Image 1: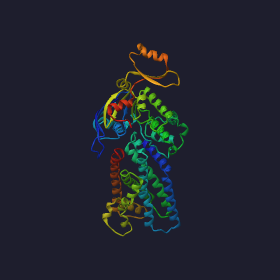
Image 2 (image 1 turned 180 degrees about the vertical axis):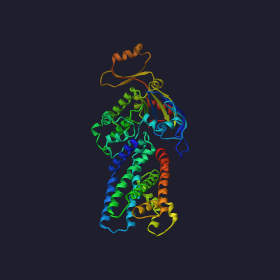
Image 3 (image 1 turned 135 degrees about the horizontal axis):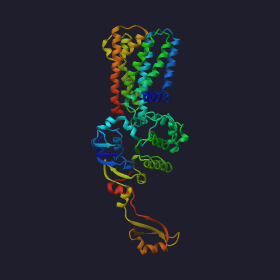
Image 4 (image 1 turned 90 degrees about the vertical axis):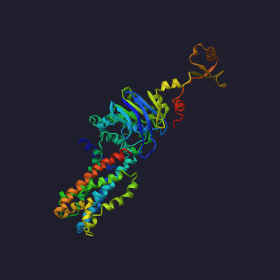
Length: 294
Length: 228
């Protein structure tokens, strides 16, 4: 769906490139995540892909069209193919939530029939239906972020670029957004997600690209990464009786069924918890890049 | 065309919500009452007051609209839609010019002078489009409304130099370089008569310079609104 080869981008008046020769491929119907700290070049890469930034080096193919030649001819129709969810709220604050969606809907060739009903369904999906006629200037940041998110879906695009879609949301609304993203994937959408929340990346992404200082040192699925970088151990937390001092012991996963010491421990003690010692994406990120996800 | 109409209608809604229309209505009311009350005002003075509506106010209003969009970052959300830059720009020009035309016509009626309303409307339409485009070129290059208001007198005073000819302080052909000279001539033609060469000058120079500004504005849209 999207192939990027040796992409380099420098902002005007900047001595060093922000994106330094990155290559990756996003398959149709997958959720591909850019995981990295602020300033890593994630949003810049996304802006190049959404044609907001030009004058880049390298090659970009989207739906088999080369960005420099054919994409130029594709022009505004390209924006019928993509939906963009921005990191920060950007709405017309004097308009209501519904009016904001109607305003942006007017830019697309949408079927007028039932349009308002469809827009109301979008608002309903993120819990904003009751606030549809409220001016956006009276919205909280979380409400504005949810409106940002559904605005990207107005024209039902096959490709979605979502920048920090759960930023500023409480856990309940964060989960609602994540569930919608997973449903969009089921519908066959290709989703490019930019985040520095490792849990979002872990829960949503089929593959993640670690991005740091404009480079991508690693691309893989969260599952593969956790297996590759994690320890195949089971940590058992136990005490002799409930309420007494807790102790920890580690056992190899491969030999667990035959491990007599393990079997004896779980039979004779009060088990507080058992956890496999998989590495978190954050641990792996630090190990691979030497940087923290801030 | 249909899309342009839809976007233009939304521009009107935004201008209502941002109280631009309220400000225009208030100014129109004050000027109109003044014209009715002082019914012997000199024509030159009336032309000066009416011509500031599509020119200076248009310059100010488009700046406010663009900078509001830049500040709230709605411009980012707009440029990643299929809207063409020409549609974006024309919607603003058509809506603000429409408001200026209605306001100017009300003031013209209130002036109780003998006016050729066709020429008057032409003067308003061309002057408004011209100054809106100049305002756009200025607004996309600055970051805040305060910066824009700061550059406003420095940008407008040189452009308004043809007023020296208009009030007969000078009689310089050099001032015909400024398209505002053509605006003033067209307004003058609506109230009085002007020479044939002045007609030719005004009807060629003002539309051609406006077309030039339009193409420059499309370039500035790419350079300052999208790339920045």
